[in-house]
Image 1 (cartoon, helix red, strand yellow):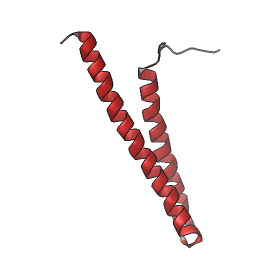
Image 2 (cartoon, rainbow, N blue to C red):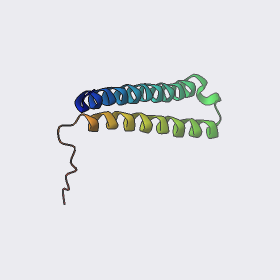
Image 3 (tube, rainbow, N blue to C red):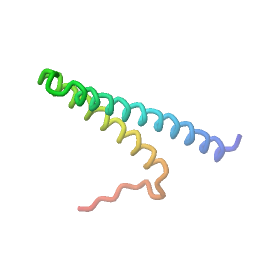
Length: 83
């Protein structure tokens, strides 16, 4: 197998894994939001805060997985220093 083919397969494999991870994290974030909406004011304040923090963590993880795919497919993967 040529290096180009191997690189393409590895990229595809990594994209699928990152896409699945992103979807999982977005679903978990949505679950936390839904839980807070369903329980409403019956949910203790501490649990609401913990749920909000968990949602934020899942959303950040999903954005990180999306960013990994974006970087992998960017035409120019160099970092530009704007100073």
